[in-house]
Length: 437
Image (cartoon, rainbow, N blue to C red; front, side, top):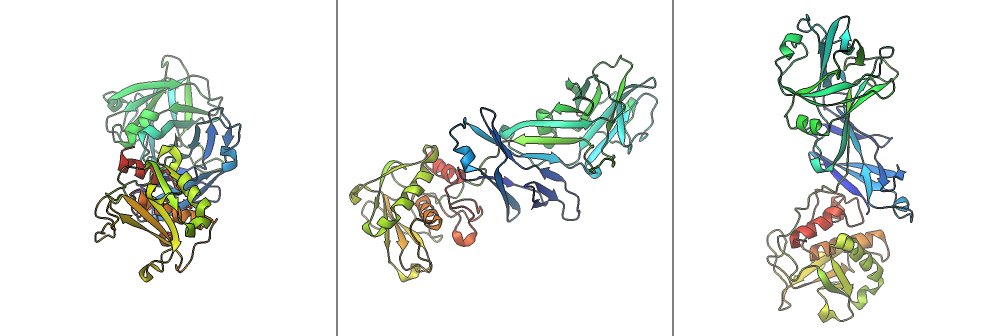
């Protein structure tokens, strides 16, 4: 594995990579971040943890691609117990404009506690208090199957803390912090989800996986908090979204943190809609004498495509047994600028004609990869550029087209800003999709 790439659809937000490997997303008209993506870490099945992951960020039209490149030495250590999980996290903004909250009690009036820097739950001065909270913008939508955990954290006001558990309820009725009252909340639709005790005297943490997914899908309107046992004479005070104190602004306000598995979610829809007859497993390739200096680069590229049992190609010394021949030579002045190119042939050993997009019109029986001896930049054997170029051309043999929208795909052309020299999961997934593997 070289890198893992995730695609961010930011809905107009601007993403910035910070020096500490975190990523912040800002509206175009604000200097306040709406979301924060924490620096990633990885852990294996035995519980060993590593934070040595390089992070890069690239904008592709209206989206962003974040690449996580884990430390290979740590991954290949003989003590590693697989599988290994990479966990980036994303949190809601703690800016006051992103949080609505208030609390209600018998005898209150509309807006009485809206805007206060804390809210109460439990019995306070003879009145039962319940709190309401919601985030106006939730963390970026992540595939439900990739979410590991989602936690809502409420920080406790010093001096008012007790060890009594607090319940969380999912709310379905519409409400506004400036108009909700004790009487109006009694008729609201809500459901008990669970309860938790405080972590020491600092905060409450609620596991909210399903509530988070419901929130981003518009299936709830926020959360309600109350004492698990509302019959006891006790209360707790928690910092609201309006609190501005503390050594770090926003640190004590409510927040949700999502931990998820990064996946190579880049597009796999970059095929030519045609393919190699007979598939990509149990096949052979031939290296011409002129390309023998590139033999190790060719094998390296084959190994990259072979991961996850995507393809299986073995070398043959008999060209008639091969479906992929590789040569280093000159062919056509029109191709002088290309480092390499791929030719497709039918069973009659005639070139398969191309369509207007330059893609083959129908399936091919075998291919030839020509490393261009007269290119503007001739490839040098045993270099990363040589290995990347050969791997790119092999992708064409397997049926993949250019993938210039994703600089982290080996099928992105070098001139379009390719940022990887190795075959990625998205590339292998593209081949699997073509052949139904």
